[in-house]
Length: 476
Image (tube, rainbow, N blue to C red; front, side, top):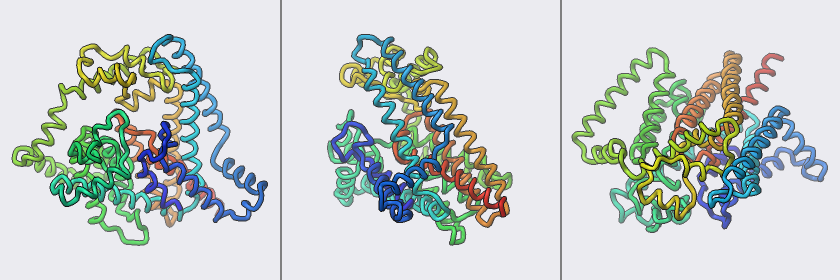
């Protein structure tokens, strides 16, 4: 059933009448149904009595959680409560202040949802077959997103032919930005603004998804010359290079700075991980591609307009002013509250104070002040530091680094194992995923969407699986 995990994460439209995103989306409900079905099918005898259900639940928790994890959660929770109380007292009587109970509820909800995703992956991915099924599900998710994206691209060329399909996608599957409903007034984002967005609320989120979720396994397969999506078949370079090229073109035509950044990041990081011999051949190919792009910039009107508007023409615009001002405000706030942070839900007051005046003379900023009474976080990384502080963020970073190092060591220990190349390819995919996720966090995307949690916890669970294999290998 792990094959369904990643495809379900595409159901990000708010179908249900709740203000909280996870309650409004259907993916978390579907995950829980999968967990129940999987548990009953694998451990049916336990579900015939209440004591049996209690036993299987206890076994899952003992397998998935450790005392260290609970201690970290408890400490992080206490730090957040303290920072929330301090921020509430600092802000005082202001429209930007938040009731501590609301702040406490927000932190509790995020913590619960975070670990619910972990439980889902921990239960559904427990053996080699589950791992392969999950990766196959990621492949079909990638293919599905690309089909949607290229239908949208074709719509921009021949609107009458594909208009009904794009409109259908927009009405029934597209995530909406509640503050910018004018982006979808024709039915979908692409119909209104003429830019591709998949099922996401805007192109930047699509670009992040393509880079962080879709590219890692493809790049890892190319690096290791291994058919990761179907290990029973011989590696087919044309298939994986075609997928890579199709994704890079989609990132380019997303017409967003995040997409351009993702292209440069993906190509650069991938090149650095290659052997010296392959670095030379790929370096030549990259240089030829860059020369071709330069030629197209001067000879092709579409490429010239795209680069001028979404790369060179970004500076000095309203959006750029607000992004720059908001990022400066985040950095200033972090400098003033580095250790504990200001607490989740308490950034608005501090961002208003820290935004430079010279970036505020535009209608968009006026909307933040007079209509929304809220300010977007334009850098996920700075946003984490501002909300959660250095203590929580440092411990989380240490965990991620140690988890990845442990995974690599375990893969090295299993060099003689028949599935070593599979493990090495997944290990490389984990590296690409983490690099892309944290590098793109310098800007903003929906980092707390289910897809990113599910993928992160897949690698956490995979590391646990490697430990079992390594112990079994040593025992034999």
